[in-house]
Length: 437
RNA sequence: GCGGCCAUAGCUCAGUUGGUUAGAGCACUAGAUUGUGAUUCUAGGGGUCGCGGGUUCGAAUCCCGUUGGCCGCCCCA
Image (cartoon, rainbow, N blue to C red):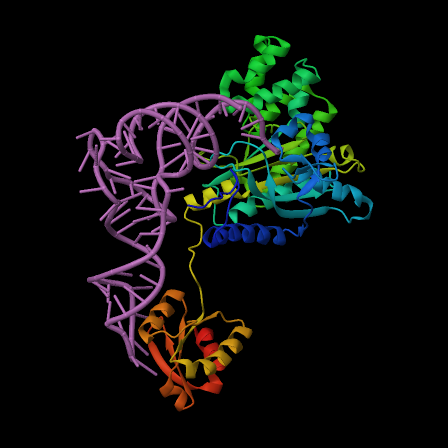
């Protein structure tokens, strides 16, 4: 038994697990590439204040935070958003807009691990800066969907729930609630799906019982699942801002629909996102069966760049976690099989033939083929077995008989056919075999 | 931070009312096999039974503690 174990919630990636992780990363990068996003990265260790500024002092309890040898208060990054806001804010005036950036990195949160949540995890972060209108949301949500659908998942597997903190705040104000009450109600809405009526306990404790009709209206608003229902509730209230906001909604939904993504998107005002810094549209992606944690979450945060010391710079972004994403792909059988993979396996007669094989092994590898061979002399039977297990299409046989005649025998492991070629034509023959496949 | 369940080989698990040197399958290594494929047969390596303490003539087994895991609560950027 190993004397040392990894820390709780931290993951080790043996080759098979690493292959799964790479598969996920590749899928994300493929999507981001297609959508024209540029990849960046930044420090894993940041000043603690960066997170306190954004989320308040309480956040420290959820962080891997400590004082470094220079007396600096630091924290392992729990998320990318504050960092990317700093990066963008520092060069805001020099960046061509819209700024479309993405990154894949590991994040750390000092929390109890449970299904779909670890203390160390990877996130794919995508953000668009510099575009205040819903055109940015169309592009970003399009990318979010592609980043999940690209693995072979369809609208029957996952969907994006779309909501709007701006409209929630408008609506609660119209019910006569002040800013503090609004904040508290949004907290309750966030919990409502899980906790039911108990979600309002915190509100009741600080602000007293909600009036019966106000509560009924909140619950009814929370249940809105379509643009038509939204308009029916809000249109009577009138007002320029509200009218403009509803126009944004129509634009967003029409855009996503025109992209052919309507089946992936559902209006759902039960979503508000826990964090208060979101300022407009918010959204979360879930598996359709509702068995897993959220796959992804995001929204607009127009005030954050300025709050962290930059200029006013509108922004909208999302993050997908690797843990839930991986669980979903495994559940649906969409993780690729893992195994050693070679294109060519060299069967070597003995020490004398090894030197000849080495020259061709190097040449084939330089040509991009994946070539394996036994490191030590093995009986032919073992070598053919190893060749089969390596997944190679071809076995090149460097035997004493063949080499004496200046030939190499090529065995196609898929159909067990064999033919001989002159040694100097091996590279060419291999190329032909793969070209014909 | 709080609660429930769990911990035996790399993996999946047996292990009798507490009783001699803790087992099986899979996986791994080697041989049968000195020129042709996933079979078969044989052998081998691998365990402080999570860790520490207690009860007992004797503990993988019973008790306490602890660490870790899974699940839930809080939280979820």
